Length: 210
Image (cartoon, rainbow, N blue to C red):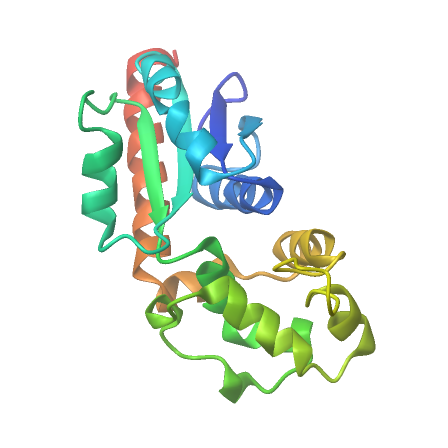
């Protein structure tokens, strides 16, 4: 358990990812750790700031979460982002395969109940879904619940990828229903992320926490 004085800084693409990251940290390290968020509104902006985050990670704990998206593999993405710098000792750089939504889909029972769809519609291996966010939205279109159909998918003609209530609904799911213990069994990248948080935070504790 990390002491109350320890702060872990998180950096990610958006608000849903930030809430998800906080829940992962609480699961992996404990509820007493202090978390400070840095959201960048997109992957490109996050990449631009990685040097600064990495410099800070020489003396403080940082958890950076980024989607793999269309990249070939997580190691290739990591090498690209850290091609000109060495990853700092307390930088926990984590890649969600292929998007963080795949981690949510990995808890099949909970997401099925949340979306009011049959569990059988959700793949056992969500990391094989090419575009998990789009897949989740399409599931929501077929939901038995009007509140899901009206808020998660985009409205016709809006030109948007998601509906007006997508962020709020997904944050509620992550905060109240998502079971990390179940999800990590169906997602290798999530399981690795949890193990990495534990390892890096332990190393930081040994070096800096009395």
